Image (cartoon, rainbow, N blue to C red; front, side, top):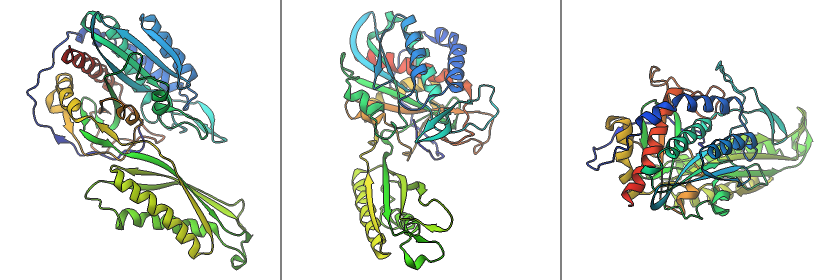
Length: 430
């Protein structure tokens, strides 16, 4: 789900004259709220890292099977796919939720706080649903239960995709949406359209935010390896300091953003998230490493950033008698909301949330591997409010932080929107 996001400025959306049918499921949806909250809290208290969501997958599969839904497990390692055929013929719509947690140690006082420990990149870490994937999973389980009781209202087929490793597979492994697509999740039966949501700790409960076109950024992981010459820390002139060179490269990279990109066109970000090198205080090491992320909303700008990062690191290192190599992964594409599908889906959101609570926003530099599905079929991804409505505008904790928190009262609207948006899509396609 979602990588680090920025605070959003909400813009009122123009009213729509399109009609979305009322399917009369309010009673069934309301009746399931407490179960959805219980599921969410259980997942939150028992989080699992990417490609390791074994118990999470078991709970999902058990629930879907209890509803009489056809279930496939082991997709993209730990993914679960459910297939629900309605009583009437029609198209196939997919609904997706991500199920993995993050290597973050929780730091709040929730009664269902995670105390889980695991290993990540050779280190012991805390594990936490610090991006709200626990809410996404619980919401979609609730949607599956509601729709399984109302097959007479389904004109077609609904595919429930519970996806692992949205946060990225461990190094050396495949995973996430890209692997699910590769293994055929959008086939047999072929999916005609796909929907997904993401909870937002910055958006008040009861509100929904969306953007047609490029909504979330492409994300690429990069590694810069600097080779110097080891020497005693008291005599730096006897070697080549790769840590000093690394600091110059970090500084140089920010000039690409601030001085070379046309930021009035689209936003872009280069973040170095990890610097490593050396073993003790009085040794200048032989090498150092930078690891970070690149976020872009335009593929021409992405190429410009990639080319300049490689060129700049090489030249800066050379200027200080060191050597540098840069590896940039292909990464996650831009999350692109199909414009026609977005426009036709807005009445469903407004019907459930109220027109005044559905907001058009600017693009977000967070990223989502939901984009891999959108490369194959029309897709629409939107943001669901999860912030306590009684809190102030700036009173929230960002995603991917130890204090991240979601208000459970926002889950019901998630069930409503995902249920109705699927039924409305199939109704339009009759």
